[in-house]
Each structure stands twice: as C-alpha cells, then as structure tokens.
Length: 443
Ligand SMILES: Cc1cc2nc3c(=O)[nH]c(=O)nc-3n(C[C@H](O)[C@H](O)[C@H](O)COP(=O)(O)OP(=O)(O)OC[C@H]3O[C@@H](n4cnc5c(N)ncnc54)[C@H](O)[C@@H]3O)c2cc1C
Image (cartoon, rainbow, N blue to C red):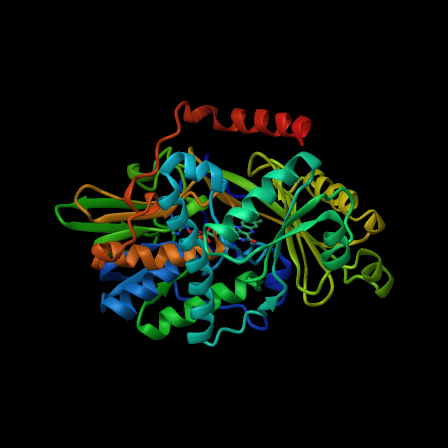
C-alpha cells in the first residue's frame, strides 16, 4: 500500500480499495485525467472532503475559477474509506484540555465550530440532494474502564450546563438497556445530532456539487512537480500542468514526501483499519441489542469504533499497521476481529467480508490547522487526527473564506496558526510503536 512517509505521491489508476463502500456503488466514477495545460485562479490538490468542499465554496460563493487534481479518483483517500461517523470533533484534545490550553471562551467557540461542521455536512447533503444512505442513530462515546466514567460525566455536565449543548450521560445499565449490550463498557455520553453516512457516496455527492458549480476535477493525475515563479504557481502532472495564482493543499494523510516544504514534517500519517462482518442473524442482533444506526467509540488510547450498518452488518475499526508495506498483513484484520470479539463475545468467529485501511493525518499537538504561506498564495488544512469527516467539510469552506474573505473566519486557534513541525521527525514511527506498546498496557 502507498506509504506517504516513503513515497513522493500516490501512484495513479489504483482504483478504490475493495471496501464495503466501493462495493455499494452502482457506478464507479471515471474523471478525465489532466492531459493539457490549464489555468485557474485556484488549484486544489486532493479531491477528498477538504479539497472538494474548498473548491465548491470558492467557485460557488466567490466566483473563482477552480481546478482540482487528485492522484486517483475523487474520494480515493480517507474520504471514501472512513467509517462514516458524522461527529462533533477533530483532533484528540478533550474539552478540559482545550480549556486549559486556550481558555473557556475559545473552547466553547471550538465546540460550537464542531457542531457547525455537522450542520455543514447536513446542509450540503440537502442542497446537493446527496443520496449517501444517511442513517440517524446518534453517537455514543463509551468509557472502556470504570476510571473513565467520571471524566465523561463531567464532560456531559459541562456541555449541558456551560456549552449550550444537549447531550445525555448514560450509566452502564442505561447503555445496555437503551443502546447496546456490549462487554466491559461502563457508561458514556450520547450525542443525538450525529448521524452515519456512506462516506464514499458523500464524497461523490460533493464531487457532483463541485462539478455543477463549474469546478473542473481531474482524476488519476498526481502532482509530481511544483514550481513558483513570482505570483504564479505551476503544478506538473505526468501529462499536463496547471498554472494558478493560489494553491490549496488538501492531501491530508496522503501528503507524500516532496509535495511542498510548507507541509513537510508538519503531520504524521497513521493507518486506521476497518473490518465489516456479514449481516447479523436475528439471534445475533437480539443478543447484542444494538440500537438501529448506533455509532460508538471508546475511550481507549488505541480507540475502537463500531456501528451497525443499514443492512445489519457490524463495521468495526481501530489502529492499523505501522507502515504501508505491512498494511495488508492479515495480522491487522485478526487484531480487529479480536477487538470485535472482546466487545461482542457472541460474534466470535463471525465471517469478516471486508477489510481495508487508510492514512489519517496526526498533528504534533493533537489538533488540526489551516495554514498559509507568507505571500498568501498557498493554503493547507490537515492534521484532523482520525476524526475529520465533518470537520474537513467545514475546513474546506473555511479555506475558501480564508482566501476570499478572511475577516469572515471565526477567531479560533484552528484557523489562525500553522501546524507545528514534529521535532525528531525521522523517529515518528518509532514513537508510534512505543505509543502502541504503552497503550496496550494502559488500556
Ligand atoms: C479507516 C478510517 C476511518 C475513519 N473514520 C472516520 C469517521 O468515522 N468519522 C470521521 O470524522 N473521520 C473519520 N476518518 C477520518 C476522515 O476520513 C478524514 O479526516 C477525512 O476524510 C479527510 O479528508 P481530506 O479531504 O482532508 O483527505 P483525503 O480524503 O485523505 O484526501 C486526500 C487526497 O489527496 C490526494 N493526493 C495526495 N497526494 C497527491 C498529489 N501529489 N497529487 C494529487 N492528489 C494527491 C489523495 O489521492 C487523496 O484522494 C477515518 C479515517 C480512516 C482512514
């Protein structure tokens, strides 16, 4: 599998991974690859949620001429292979950590932005009439140890009393009675505004909206060279080139080694993997008693997440391999199967019909950023740390605002400061190994 810490860009014509989502498509899209020289006001690199949302908002609301290029088809990166949880959040900082870091007002502003990101996805689904198998069901954040319950309870109380949000704290009995009969869970917070989607259909819906607004999207055209001369950027692909005044980097966890210095060493690509079971039998369903459409994630350092899909399969995800070369090793699938079995013992040995992985982008200080070059001609948004479905959609809109109407941006740390560089970046993978070992003990 492509490895962004080793290769300069993803190879073209790879096709979607053999995921449950790709199987669900009636028609596999085929965009033209770039074969000529084209000009744009803004060139966007990467056709995931960030890039497509940025392109759509730039063209639709600010009348910019936008060209998007992707190394493969739209949604080939994380956007077409995630778990489809539309959640309030990004990064890995808790409410309390955000309050300590930036103060209560900024933490409230950030949480408000998280909720806005869900509304942004919902708004686009409605505007674009996107058929993405949207499933209500809400999201449950679950304590995997008794010691975590108090933290979740405090968080729920804070959200209700100070943040103007309405969430429900549920104790372990209520989890089992109202949501899911899962082993070793001790309570949680339920967010009823969250919903599930088929993420690839969502990405292709954004693609259709961008096209309709007038954006040109070229697939199977990785950017392999980038030159800047004065105010003009020239991006070269194997058979064509784009000249543009401004460039948006929307390559997130798939950013290769040499795309541009502005993003070098500023994020860490980490693999997350998913398994999907065969449809559950009536007996299995009545044993695990999972609420229709429920999405859940636990408080482990190496988080497990799962949801009941509309056709009664369980999608179960967690950490993947360390390197791209190891990504398809069966051990990764077995690790998730064990996690599934520990969560739902009755599903021991259930056939797994799909397994795939994708690169999420972790940032050094656990939250993402929208950054810009000093001459305001290059912009990026990345570092969502594994939960960027809703946030990247909003980030695309914020990128368009940053370029065309910067005064409209909320004053929040996400939008105003660059991603910090990783110190000792060559040791990131060693650090990840150590983190996983430590997490095994602590979790
Ligand atoms: C297994 C898994 C499960 C996840 N589950 C969830 C979830 O349930 N909820 C949630 O909120 N988040 C989830 N995420 C994270 C979420 O999917 C991402 O944060 C989000 O999709 C990021 O979108 P993006 O557009 O920024 O990047 P991506 O969708 O990764 O797009 C980047 C694109 O850049 C292209 N690219 C890279 N280099 C070049 C180049 N040189 N030239 C041209 N194109 C290039 C790639 O081909 C790729 O298509 C999950 C991620 C994974 C991997």
